[in-house]
Each structure stands twice: as C-alpha cells, then as structure tokens.
Image (cartoon, rainbow, N blue to C red; front, top):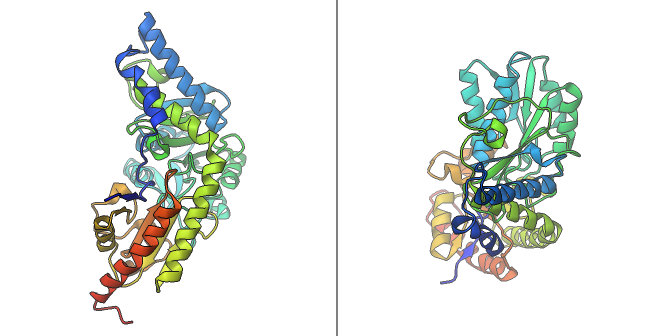
Length: 387
C-alpha cells in the first residue's frame, strides 16, 4: 500500500540533494574543524560556508550571528536561559505566550523556579497574540519577550515584525521560535526586529539533530556549553559537520523555492480544508483562516477521539497527527487548543494534517475519500453522536 504522509510539521524527509551534500563529510572530509591540518581546514571551510548559507536565508547582518546547535529545543533553551541570566541585573521578568512549544514553556517554568517571573499572554480564538498586549505587559524589569513566529499545531502566524518593533523601542530583547516558519514563509531578522531566532533543519528537509540560533550582534547571552572554543566559545564541542552541511544546503534550497512551494501548498491546503468542511458535518477549523502556514490544516471533529481517528487513518495509509509530536504520548488535550478556548471534548477530537513539498493533489483527493467514512464509522460507535 502506497502511503500518504501528512505529518510534515513533525518532521520532513531529508531531500536527496541534502544527503548528497552531506555524504563526503562522513568518509572523505571527516576532519575536526578545530584541527589546523588540511583535513581540518576543509571541514572548517564547510562549517563556515553553511554559516553563510543560514545567515543569507535569514538576512542576518553577518554570518557570525549564526550559532549551530542540536536542534530547535536546544536553541530555545539557550536563547531564553542565556538571555535571562546574562541580563538579570536589569530585571528578572520575561514575557511569552500560552501557546508556545514546550521547549519554550518548560524553559520559562524552570526559570520561575530560579526566581524569575514570567507573564504568559493569552491568544484569541484564532491563536493570535495581540501586539498591544505584549506592549502592555512590558515592565521596567522586563528583559526578554519570546513569541513563536508560527504555531506548530494551529499554523497561525504571529505579528512578529510589530512585536519586534515594540521590543526594540522599549529596549527589551526579542526572541522568536521560528522552527515551523523557516522554509514555509519569509523571515527577515533585520526587517522584523528579531534579536534571537531558533530553527531546526529537519522541519525543512534537512537532517535531524541539527539546528541553529541566530543572535544579533551586540546581544548579551550566557554561553550554553563550556569546554572549548567552538562557536566562539559559547557552545563547546566538536561540530557536527555533516549535519551542519545538510542544514546549510536545506535552508538554501528552501529559500530558493519558498514562494513557489508556498503557493502550491496553500492551494492544496485550501482544497483539503474546504473539502473536509463540505463533506463532514460538525467540523471546525482551528487557527487563523488566512494568517496561517501554507501547509497546515488543523480541524476538530466532534464526538470522536483524535487518537482513534489517527489510528484508523494510519491503517488506511495516511499519516497525520493530533498535535505536537513532542507530546504524542500524553493523554491530555493540547494546551494550544485549550488556550484558544476549545472545550476538552472538542480539543480531544482534533486532527492536524500538514503537507510537504511532495504532497500532490491526488494525495489530497485520496484523503477526502477516506476521511469521511472513518469519521462516520467512529461517530456511529459514539454514544454522544446523534445524526
């Protein structure tokens, strides 16, 4: 059975061009980038070339503003903890939103145990935070605001440029978790007044286990790992050269085809959403109807459990998700769906389908044939459902 993969928000397939770019750095150019011999220098050149690729894609001022990490969660932890501790003499107050990824929320909760104070801003029914609410929440002792560029579950895109301008005017550092946004929508760290940005390669057809943190020149944060001079002494440890090369190639490819892919996926996404709403009763779209990622379709199906829906889809050859892959083992409803005001029973019946660069119209049409029958079967087994 040929499967349909619609869980690209969780991870994407590594592009063949990315794999090809990485291969020489496993067995041919395998030197340590800190070594001064030729093999080490070749690895160092590859490292810095990838740094330039990432900087160019983000419109960073200089490549030295890019620091390589093991992924988005590490980048989030580093940005928030590093900024909080480095600037605690100014104040110990941080601001974030109620719908952030747990890499941000759990980091903020940990900081609260260290004596910091965190304001968790609400969002509206579409999952969007108000820039005015951010401005009102800023206090004299506020040192950092962290708002994700686009939500990983809802796909809602936040007013990042507006929030960044407010933070810049008030002298507060601004971090954004752009893990879901990079490769899907344009991101310009200078135009959007971003001080720090987190990204992860495997979300845009790069390898797993490698990411980056953008830190604007002049921003003070504490280092993450001590023990060596790598990443200008802020993150010690021998660099993952194959992974970093893959990240550089993947972000270069994503930037080159950004507009084309976004237009194509938006059309397929809209076909999927409208098709579901037309064919299946008592279904609601979660997230902003227009300000959303081009590949995200998150809908709630009343009277059924999302996990049961996922399992039936999987048996039919369709891979989807009920929310963040990082919380897939939890029986609790999504904190994001609760934050936009969904009742527990409705939040439990949500399904996130996220398209990829290889998703076809035939895939979408197949899902629109399969999904209504599954929903009807599951509802017929529900004591709550009445036709």
